[in-house]
Image 1 (cartoon, rainbow, N blue to C red):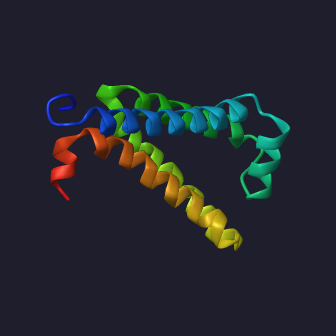
Image 2: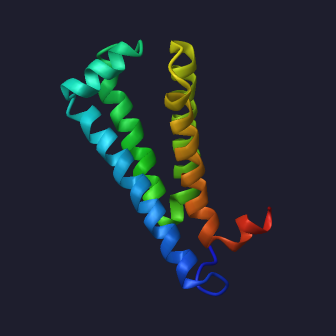
Length: 127
């Protein structure tokens, strides 16, 4: 992945900051699921997921987040996180949640890919 040659320091640092925010947010979600906190279990059950699935969801989210955090596996991690966020959108639509709840995962997905696009000249060349 090309980073230092054609990317300004400002864009590079902005991408790292965005990626850090995404990683922290998803890690918090994964950890709460793995610890089966009351909030995580109640949230999953209220959305129609079985109580026993919370740990599995946490493992999947943790793996995707770690892959996204590692530079060599960032793209596969971003794809997995995008799929995760797509599931969140679908869940909110099925539940008839307010538009803000449905748009939040979409915006987060844009941030996931923006952090990559800022530092990857090949990806930026596609646009």
